[in-house]
Image: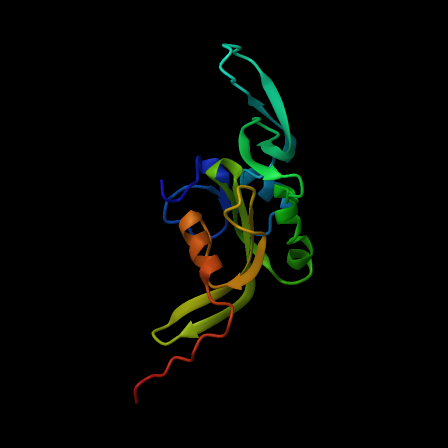
Length: 191
């Protein structure tokens, strides 16, 4: 499962169906709350203390201790654990990922294109079209997007960046965050 979408309801999109065929297709210009519900982002990431069973060989089955320097992150909807983090870790909530786009969509001419959760909620992303595009030789069209992505498992820092890749899964998210941030070299055509 290279796309790392655990179920079809872990993603929403407008426009063409993603390569993997998963996700909830939405009509254009839906409110943030609709995106949150249909992209599988309608949960909160909660913190709890870390407990461990200290087995010192005395055959006590339950000898729980807590580790005060770390927290367990877990989903509010199904209580599934997401990761263990330090006390200093700043949680970015799924709703915050989408809220980032509220003003950009309402006043800035951006349009949400895809959003979702990967690895059971350990990674989150939302992607919006900026309204800018480039027509390449051969009539290939390249859209400009603004991506906001984060993880709570240490695999990705919270990232906001422009990209030209339509993020619909783990593969395309990895490609998008590895894109160079500088201007590409101009394409030179033979005369």
